[in-house]
Every structure is written in C-alpha cells, then in structure tokens.
Image 1 (tube, rainbow, N blue to C red):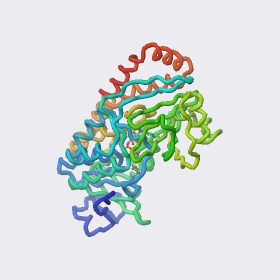
Image 2 (image 1 turned 45 degrees about the vertical axis):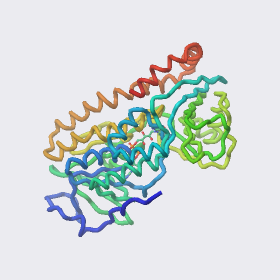
Image 3 (image 1 turned 30 degrees about the vertical axis):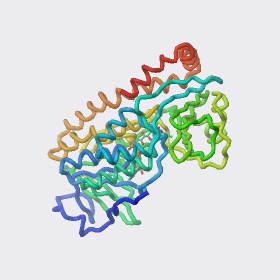
Image 4 (image 1 turned 120 degrees about the horizontal axis):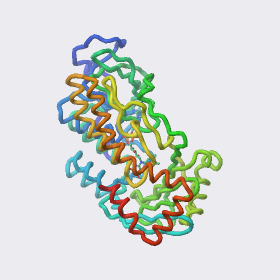
Length: 399
Ligand SMILES: Cc1cc2nc3c(=O)[nH]c(=O)nc-3n(C[C@H](O)[C@H](O)[C@H](O)COP(=O)(O)OP(=O)(O)OC[C@H]3O[C@@H](n4cnc5c(N)ncnc54)[C@H](O)[C@@H]3O)c2cc1C
C-alpha cells in the first residue's frame, strides 16, 4: 500500500499564517476556519465536501493512517453512491475492484438457514483502505491532515472555538471558527463539554471483532452471514485476501462471563451456522454500540457520525449515516464559518432528525426485535414461509 502524503507536523512557521484574533486560550496557538476531529468516513466526507468551499480546513486523527477500525466494511447501495460522489471516478473504481460485491444474505437462527437475495450493488471493503483513500483525496483538495494527534475541545470565546492538540508529546491549541467532532464511538473529543459527549444506552450491546485466516468453506466470498443467538448475533463477511471478518454484537454480561471466543462460538452453535475452528485470533472490543450525544450542535460545534448517535450495525447502515452526515453537515458549517448564529445549530439538529434519526428508526426496531425471543420466533416462522418478506426491509436499508 502506498503511503499518504506527508502529514503536517507541528511547525508554527507554516501554521501561524492567519492574524491572531483576541482569545482566552493560552499560546502557542494557530488558526483555521474549520477543525475536524476524527478522520473516519464522517470526518473525511465532511473534509472533502467542505474543501470545495475554499475554507481553510484542518483534519486531525489520533491514529496513524492507514489504520485498522473495527468494522465489517459492508457498504450498502446508498453508501456506494455516496462514495462515488465524494471520490474521483478512477479512485472509487480502483476501490471497488479491490472489494467484494455482496450478493447473498444468509440468516442462521435456531438451526435453520434462511437464504435471502441481497443484490443491491453493495460491497464489502477493507475499511483501512476505504478510510485511507478518503483522507488522501481530502488532502489532494487542500485539506491539512495532522496525524497521529489527539484532539479535544477546549474553551471558546464569542468568535472562536479552541481545540487542544497533543502530538509528539507536545500540546498546542488551534482556534477555529467551527469545530466538527467526528471521533466515532466512545467520543472523548468533547473535553469538558458534557453535552457533546456520547452516552451509551442503558442495555446497549457491545461489539467484538476478529479476522480469520482459516474458516469453513460455507462462508463464501460475496455472502453476508448473520448468525442469531439468544445473547446477540454474529456477522461474517469475506474481506478480500482470503480472510473472513467476524463481528458480533453481544450482551455485556455474556461477554464478561465467557470472553469473546466462547461467546461467539456459543451463538454460532445456537444458530446452526458452521463453527469457526481457528483459535489463535486476536479479538478487539468496541464501546457500547447504541449511544448518542445529548446535543449535536451548539456554540460553533457540530457533532457527526457515530459520535452523534449510533444504533447496532446491520447491513451497511453505519457507514451510510457517517458519509451522509459528513456530506450533509457542510452547508451548516459554511454558514457558521461565515457568520455564527444559534439558528444554524437548530437548523442542523432539524436536518439531522429528518435524515439520520429517521433512518436509524428501522435499525432500532430491528435491534429491539432481535433482543426479544418471541419477536425472533415470529420473524423466523414468517421468513421460513415467505423469505421475500425480508426484501422490503433490505430494500429500505438500501434506498
Ligand atoms: C464491530 C463493528 C462492525 C461494523 N460493521 C459495519 C458494516 O459492516 N457496515 C457499516 O456500514 N457499518 C458498520 N459498523 C459501523 C461503522 O464502522 C461506523 O458507523 C463508522 O465507522 C462511523 O464512522 P465515523 O467516521 O463516525 O467514526 P470512526 O470510523 O470510528 O472514525 C472516528 C475517527 O476518529 C479518531 N479519533 C477518535 N478520537 C479522537 C481524538 N480525540 N482526536 C483525534 N482523532 C480521534 C479515530 O482514530 C477514528 O479514526 C460496524 C461497527 C462495529 C463496531
């Protein structure tokens, strides 16, 4: 994999090019129109969309890119279209050539398999590669990328927001007209501003994931498999290079009691899906999967992507919300950078409710249904008699 263009280092001579306005934040400091904390799909989609507006943008990520991210990498048809709008045609085509087209969806529940058609043009992508190309494109449009550097919101005055950045062991403050928090699940970039902090739902499940090099031949390339057990579910997809990505959403108590390997094995056995025999894999955990921030915009701050709110993953919804939210926040940020008014924050919240929250409703219902044994049983019986009943749900998720 080629490396990214050199990342921006702390060099005040190159950064402190704008006049320094009055500020309550201690020096040394520098200024940008927009600071984006987090270079996942939400942050990068915002950076790419905003770059076209001529604003001066600094994108920051705590990890060195390309970086690994716990994700099945399933893009639904809408995410595919959004990627095609964000990236140049040759770049996105190269990404699709390296990815796997999703064709079938196998649901395993109570020792039965229900095969469903899923040919809506979705892909399973390598997340580290996808996020890398988005950041790379943002940089080619003039966005500065600072990584690895940890950032958090600090004080604000009437004109500017402060962001504290820690890189190479040194702390520095950047002042911005607008800050976008796009730091994913377990949002710690809000600093002391509790209202922007994401809070997990009370009985939220947690995620675990691992990559398998050896696995049963039943898990074919182009198939998305979901094994549903009593304490959660497991999603399995090929991720290219002959590897299988396994991600599970589990009740916290089950995970604590059995650990990831045993809990996943148990759910696979309960569902009737072929067991995974490789034992030397490294499991990675995630913060609680259902969470939301109390406020997603105020005082020159916009919260987007998983940091704003997330519901358990299904067939490519998380990436769709992140990309849609990243591109959709741009007009609000442009207005805010021009002249901040509280009304902009209210308008963004309304837009978010109508688009992202409205789409998350279906996943909330599915997630609730999967947790209830009786709802699972009714759905199972209905799908056995008429598998086409799932079509409308799959279509809704892809439309
Ligand atoms: C196990 C699992 C499987 C999933 N599978 C799928 C799937 O198959 N399909 C799908 O569509 N969705 C899936 N999702 C959801 C999807 O991964 C997320 O919805 C998506 O990554 C959200 O993008 P984001 O940009 O909001 O956040 P992220 O992708 O999490 O990006 C946030 C970035 O912020 C950086 N960051 C964090 N804190 C700081 C800080 N203080 N300073 C600087 N940088 C910071 C992080 O390093 C990271 O790069 C899955 C999620 C999980 C947990």
